[in-house]
Image 1 (tube, protein in one colour):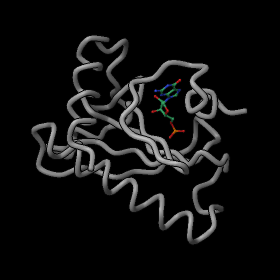
Image 2 (cartoon, rainbow, N blue to C red):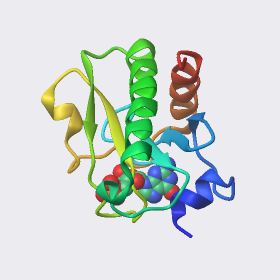
Image 3 (tube, helix red, strand yellow):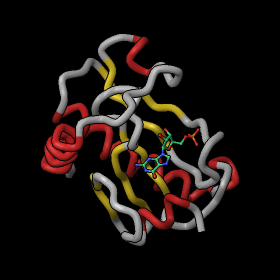
Amino acid sequence: MTIFSRIINGEIPCYKIAENDKFFAFLDINPVNWGHTLVVPKKETDYIFDIDDDELAEMTLFAKRVARAIKAALPCRKVGVTVLGLEVPHAHIHLVPLKHEGDMDFKHKIDNPDAEKMKQIAAAIRENFE
Ligand code: 5GP
């Protein structure tokens, strides 16, 4: 079982943003910028482009709803979208609020982000999720 499946199952805590029967969204624990969110399918697949067409389309639409909530909750120009998948073998979409290109620099992450701030950000995004 992947670490993300353990988060989805509630075995490992997370700053949860949203969930439906197929997808789950939560804050990245080492964000590249405040509000950095991961969208993952509940069904484990390592590589995003191995996900079947219908599920990938649904995942994109779920990520769109999460991105809209991030944009409504946090000051940013746009929400950037990236797929890496080099660390965790469970497909996921990174969503990062952007003011500048440098806001999505994966070489510079926020280590040990303040828990209270993460909690507040997650709550603000959740409130705007439709
Ligand atoms: P990638 O697989 O896309 O290269 O990177 C995995 C991402 O998942 C990283 O940005 C990392 O910070 C995040 N991540 C890894 N383990 C955990 C975890 O246990 N909880 C949360 N919230 N994020 C994690």
